Length: 282
Ligand SMILES: Nc1ncnc2c1ncn2[C@@H]1O[C@H](COP(=O)(O)OP(=O)(O)OP(=O)(O)O)[C@@H](O)[C@H]1O
Figure 1 (cartoon, protein in one colour):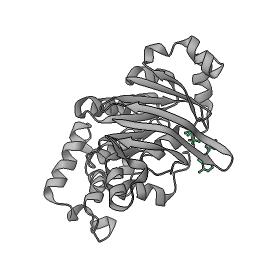
Figure 2 (cartoon, rainbow, N blue to C red):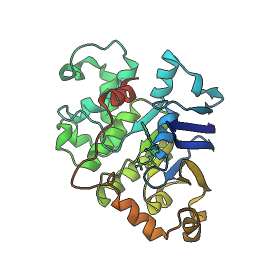
Figure 3 (cartoon, rainbow, N blue to C red):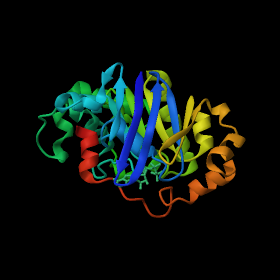
């Protein structure tokens, strides 16, 4: 069970997340929806402590995650696989090596360059990486450079990489915002499959209500840092959407589609390299 207790994050005068309390049972798939700036990313990033809460607590199976330091914090981050909007693969490396990067946390002393990374992992982990790719339908692409894959394939490689961490929770921060509908579908299906088959808890930030309704067990709708709705998809009726956001569902979705962070000809900016490395190797 993941418990968020009155979790709050301020950036200067901005209250990005405002007193959020949620109890997420193990194995649940939760869709967090809301317009740009609602606080979705900050909420997710606090869970693996990429963003520090200003106040409130995060508990996982009774352990106070908010107080973890050093190795205990690194272990917690390992147990939270993170999926970013922009995949964050090493483009010039092959797919298999990218998946093995998810294992780096288990080898803190692994030296050498990225180019020789593959050979430095034990054979059992290379097999594990191939198995992860196989279950995501990508084993044939294992030796291709990551940047030769479609966006949807790259995001599934990122999911395979997260699986290598053997996570308890997957935090997916707008995993489909840069993808076309067909690729978005394959990625959401992959996340749902991982959730169902492995029982991994998934928290997934999404812009579109229909996507959240279709794939998630539970929807948390945010606005101005607060949770305005928390319940099963069927309970988030068009009338409820209007009540929360003051617009129809169609308007909500079209506003989301018009946001600059959603797929467009130009890729949105990536998180800082240090942050990505922290997420991958911490
Ligand atoms: N590092 C930061 N410094 C200052 N303000 C920030 C920072 N990160 C987020 N914010 C602010 O906190 C609020 C919530 O941002 P957040 O990125 O969590 O929202 P979001 O719902 O994920 O939006 P989007 O869908 O656009 O990613 C916004 O007003 C944002 O400008």
